[in-house]
Image (cartoon, rainbow, N blue to C red; front, side, top):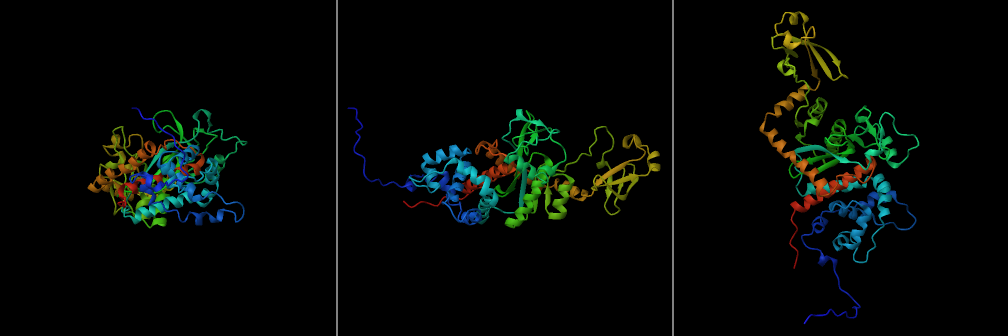
Length: 449
C-alpha cells in the first residue's frame, strides 16, 4: 500500500556539520586551502575608527566576493541571497548555519571606501600570486601580455560628442575618477586624440568599434601571464586604445619585478606591442627578448622600393639603395625626436635609372630610421627562429584566459563604473581565475574516512 509521510514532533536537538555536507570535489573546498586572508585586518586597520560599533568582518566580505567571482555572481544583492541559502557558500565564508549575511549595501560602502583606499584587492590578488609561486606554478622565464575589451556600464544612446566635453554640472564618483586620471599613461595621457563620443555616466570608458559591429563604451583588461601554467602575474585596467595598452604592459612588467622579483627573459605579444618605442624599451631598458611581431608601416603598394629594399650598414651607419648608392644621415632627429632621416645625393638620384621606381615625385630618396631600429631588427631576427614559433603558440594561453573570463566568470560587461571600478572587477576576476587554476593543478589531499 502507498505509504504516508507522518510528521512527528520536532527534535529538540540536532547534530549538523557543514563540513560533512560539502563534497570533497567541490570547487570552493578545492580553493579554500589557497585563500590566505590572515593579513586583511592588518591591511585595513588604519582605515577603521578606534571607537564605535564593530563593523562587518572584512575577511567575510572578501570571501563572499571570491565566491561571487568564482561562480559568476557579480550582483551583490544576488550574492547575499545565494550565500544565505547555499551551504557550500556558508561553509566557505565561515558563517555556519546561523551566521548573519551582511546587507548588499555594505559591499558598496567598503568597495568605494576602505578597500580602494588601502588597495586591499590588489593585496589579495598578489597574495594568491605568491601562493602560485610557492607551489612552483610560475617559472618566470617567459611572459605573455595581451588586452581584451570589456563593455562598460554606459548606455551608448546617452552619449555626448567628445568635442563638447562634459557639462560642468555633471558630478559623480565616475566623473571624479575620470578627472583624476587625465594625465595617467593608461588613460587620458595615453593619447591627445579627442574621443568621438563621451559617456556622462562613465567618461573614462572609451568609445570603440574594434569588434567590427556596433560601437560601444569599453575598458581594456590587460593581463600579464607566466607561460608555464598561464598564471596571471599582473592585471591592469586601461582605456581601450593601443597606446594605453602598451603603457599598461610596461607598468605590469615593472610591478612584477618590484613585487615578485620576476624578471622574464622573453615577452610574447601581438603586433599592438610591436611599436619601435615599446621594442626599444624591452631590449635597451629591460633586457627582454621581444617575441613580438614588428609593427611596420614602411611597406608600399604602388610598386616603388620600400625601406626593406635598402641595405643598412651597421658599421658605417649608412644605407645603400638598390642601385648601390649611399644614403647618409646628419644626425638630425625628426618626428618628436624618435626618427633619423638618411638622404641620398640629388646628383646620384638624377642620374639613376631606378629613380622612377624609387622616388618619382621627389628630387632624392629619403629613408626614415627609428632610433629604436636596432630593437626592431632584433625582433625581426627572433621571428625567424623556432623559439618564436613556440612563443606564438604559448601566447594563445592568454586568449583562453580572456575567453574563460567572459564565458565562465561572465565578466563580459562591467557592473562598476569608473577606472577604480574597472580595476576592482579585473582584480577580483583575475584572483578567481588563479584560484581556480590552483585548484585544478594541485590535487586535493585524500580525506580521512
